[in-house]
Length: 572
Image (cartoon, rainbow, N blue to C red; front, top):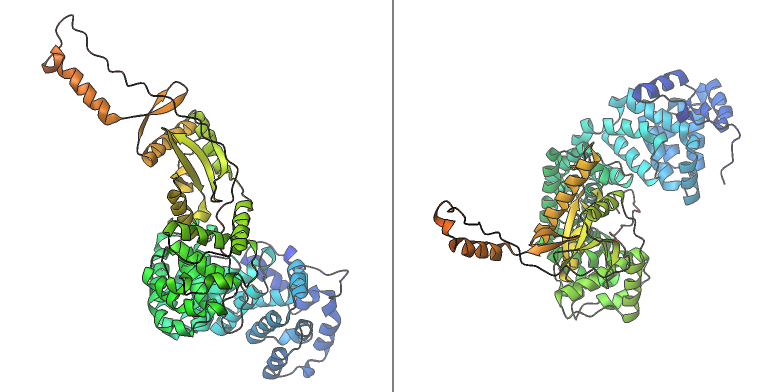
């Protein structure tokens, strides 16, 4: 275990906000950066007193690259840190990411002060001496930080320095560096649309240089970033064509080389295209032809991702799931977690939806997957509650998180004009950066409609547009929006009737009105004196029945990828 320091000081607490604050802090620290941690003080003083003992830069880099433990890497930095250049810093981070054990990684995340000297020296070098950094050093540092899961407030300035250093160097990035950089930013949740646009624009014409593993990693990384709610909230339309072009180019470059992909790469490609709902049935079918004969080599995560991806794409693959395939057999041989069971249940629903005579899941596994899908937790949003309040203002009874027999949860259920309607209140996580629905949302909507539900989607940007400082006016606009949207979803016209709403047949009413008017003397001109104008009364209809109650149900679970990565660019 790492020794606890009584007076370990985290310099990030003393750093003013912004790049200027970090630069100022570094200048004040001068050559004594490692002295922020008490454990470095003695060795640093000894090294400063005997500078003749410093090894050559090449020898020092060799010693860092061959360090047997993370502790040794930090000891070398404490002893010789005053002579570290950008290559030594990059090698140190890479070696830490390879050597740090799981407990050590957790300790680094919990105690940023342990890495503060190395972090601040790297930040200062990137901000003050950025031109000295090469493409390989920048990409390797970003990749190593992501593997160590080092992000957050203490690491903000270091990541900012890396982000500023990347654009001028992109043309000199190798294929591996491009794939690793994209993976690093997606892994840490630092989705930056301008940077992703630059990475996609650089990678698209060079896909022939990528190894199969790097292609799969690239697809996974951009999928994870496109599904990021933070990216969707401020992504500009000018960044979208480059990402769409990347996926089109991937679907052209990958098929001739699918035989070279590992099972994880095949599953990642299928998951990536399904997650962003990129429509390319031919490419998905090619993935099925390659994956089917190799299903016996897939692990549980790869089997679940593949099954879910084909359900989203709605592409039938007898090679993967047909009578001669081994999908159902393999499913009975591996262990599953809850998220994977959710994916299997959605595949079972897709099998029922298509009516294909494919072998079903083993009965016990099918029961487990249904139970896991139906018991997943749901978290109603504030926007969903406001939609329910607006429905109440319309006089409509509603229920939240209604669970249907198939296991899906409908955000809000109500009845409109005698038709049961499921209202899906869709926040940013339900959409890509171009406001098109994600694969999970597409699959849920399609399957709910198949099982007889009339659906109304309330996108977050349309609902936010109804905000007004006057709460009364805001509620009026929300009610008018919902009434019009419900009419459009059900294909009816409605009018108020007592405490509720009923549907009216506008066509029949118009015919009746025309017939009555033709019988009136005033039809051809002004009504004569004493002639009363006919008053049309809409036919009386029975009020709609009360909607049936139902229990809550889970939200659609999107699949997750394993994120273990090797130096050669291994992605999720």
